[in-house]
Amino acid sequence: MPSSTGSGWVQLRQQTRSLEAQTDTLFHAYSRFASAPNLPPKPTEEETKTETQIQELLEKRETLISQLTRLLDSESLLTASALKQNNLSRHRETLLEHRHTLSRLRASISESRQRANLLSTVRSDIDAYRSANPESAEADYMLDERGRIDRSHGVADSVLSQAYAVNEQFGVQREMLGNVQRRIVGAAGKVPGINGLIGRIGAKKRRDGIILGGFIAFCMLVFLYFM
Image (cartoon, rainbow, N blue to C red; front, top):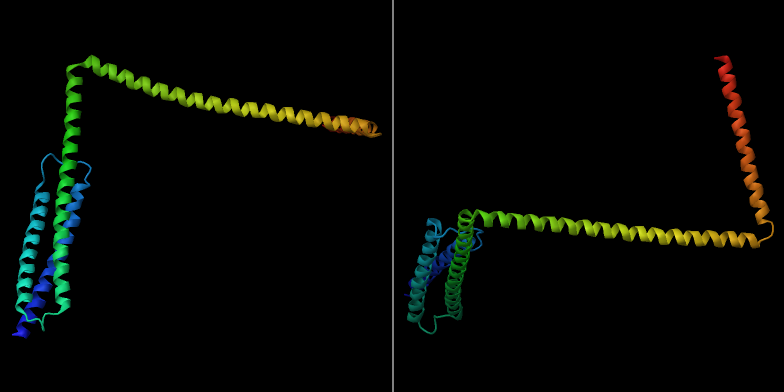
């Protein structure tokens, strides 16, 4: 009797674990309906079929857990191990958790469907109103255009403000460079011989420029002569 009871326990547990895995797979498929961007007004055939399959699996698991409970109660205190009791408790907790998950997903899908239906109804009402009132539709179009123009003006004002800020910064930098140049000239004027040295450098540059210009003119004349 204990051996037959043990084999029966193992078979029932294997069936329960297999149904738990199938339930997890169906939950993954069922949760996609809750996150769908546009739900139809009524549940699709696939959605209804998936929900029905989950419900059937939960009922089968409850039946198996009842059989496991009766089987464990029929054993004596010596043969009923703590491991079996823990396994049975885990199956019960998993079943309860999956029932809560089904209720939560069902409520989420219903909420998403109601929201999608509400948006669809509002859009239909707006389209119907615009069709019956073309003047209002034209006014809405003009308001949209005005909004786009205002946004364009805002972008242009922002760019101009940045340009003015950059120009102001350039003016400050030019003023700073001018101050530095004046300080350098003032400091150079206070050092003996600096002005004379600067003058001689300038005169040398002018002389070199005259010599280079004369040489280029001579080369051009020679070139024209032989041409």
